[in-house]
Length: 395
Image 1 (cartoon, one colour):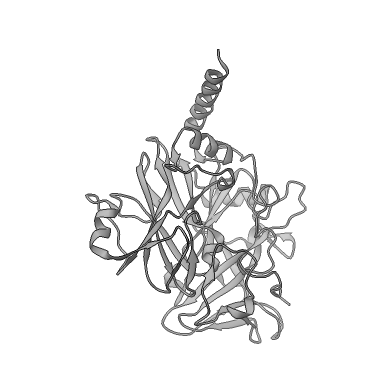
Image 2 (cartoon, one colour; image 1 turned 45 degrees about the vertical axis):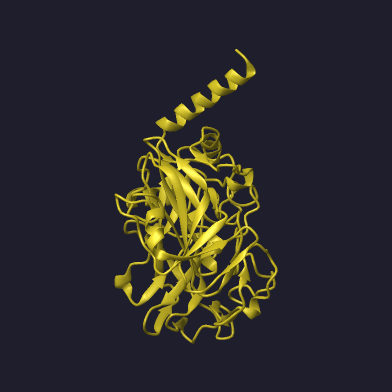
């Protein structure tokens, strides 16, 4: 057998093993999926650094359409057929362009999918995207759901981008979203979540695992808000209005004071959110994702009040975790907005919940030092675009 045919046979065997698995495909299987052209990039190539422990980054193509409104295709139409009636300007992204606040844009992505019949996909914003209040979601042809991509889908991917708080400067090749590939339904039930926490703690507070009696589960694991501390401590940041655009291609280049105001708690551990203002806060618990699992932050239940949360939803295997037990979780950044009226939130109030899924296999790289992750062990929730001189929360 030649070297090439042996390699091909090995890839086929590995792919066959993947197809028999259930769960989220890990990094090594994602690289195999790229080799098998389940994900393609036309004249581009998918870069090694695009492959995360449980997802692949999706990059902006060479143009964007400015739209008069958002939309979804129906079962009989493609995305571009809908765009013909709704787009009023085509914007070249190859040398960079500024996207205005509160304007919906649609960007064809570089990556396309050619999924097998038993593989589905789900997209979500990258963490830095959510921390800048950039509303994004993926559209596919003949599909009336955002971010959910049916098994066997062959076609282009399109990203709706709505900068909510800041105008943003973007460029071809920039990644704002990511996609997971999945086989079957591997989501954990509540009793399985409790059992997993018993074996490998999922939530910590003050460096100790939460007792089982302290867990709150209801179709997911609830995470609570931290607004504790003295009245001069910082518990979060509130976005300033009318700031200059943020260039998303530059890391660590901006003064946070030009874009954010610190948030201080009132006596009794509470803050009042001003309506339609974007806040960055932190969870009171540290979240730890064991290597054989992935998590997703779910939308907040609107019946709990006039509070809306906008999340970058994926938590990779290894987030807040260390095999030697030295890590006690990383706190989750919470992107929060009150609707219509001012709304009070208090320390310890549930604000989100995590759904956990099994990985089809433990990934060969984990979130954190393995891939140089920006938010492992975070003590502030500002995105990587700001200089590292922001005061840690609680100080």
